[in-house]
Image (cartoon, rainbow, N blue to C red; front, side):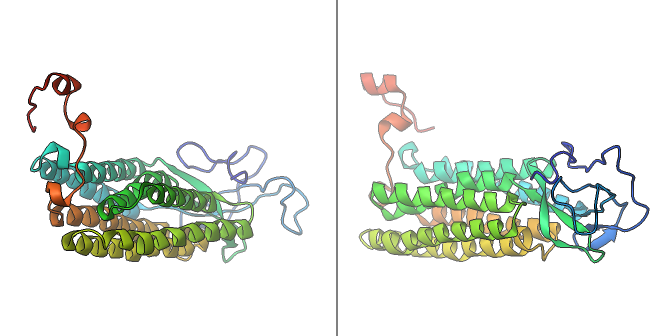
Length: 323
């Protein structure tokens, strides 16, 4: 992001270097609408467009979130807030040792809750050059919410952990698929922040998609093979939840290609599309898993006592409550 880092303040506002006079015309582009005042921004040394011999005034069109997208972020934040509360209530209805899926799902929802709060407060966002030009030939910069990638780096491995534990996958396969998922998210982040070369951005995107295919192979292959050895109830729940993940997660790279990739849809539409997928892939997925699973000792993952009881009670044989 060398192109902009000297000209963007902490609040995301572009500043104009002192020697550069402000332009007298043109518009700024904001997610498909033209409004506001222009901003002059000189290109970095060595990147001057043909025909411009020096640092002359340079117009930049900005694609950024509007009040529509900000309201959507607060709405999604409210959804995840409610989901966290409901998950806590559901966890209290089962024994401590049978709350593993509640714990993992709760961490997923709390992380997403925090992520949407951060984005709704205007943080976790930066400006990145888009490899396209406006109608008047001026370059375009776009807001990228990197906070969502931090969210995904935490929540997507946990979603896969839910599936892996449900299916009873071997530990080595669980570790491998979680690592591939983390690389997938990080490569997507680097692709979204790449603004020095469009070819490099799509190359990183392709690497991310390759790791995603590996994750899908693990879900469909090793995951379903392990689930087939479980009870019919577990097998049914795994088939439903894994199918949800496959369908919903396929939407993320598609949205990336249309937003951070090509800039074909507005930042507001990007926020709404990603938000809908997050709600379906985390809230709906989590609630289905928690409600459909029996959470009985014969049909669930049982936590060891050292996870659920005070160590003193284990040492002296005291009986702890189930609160």
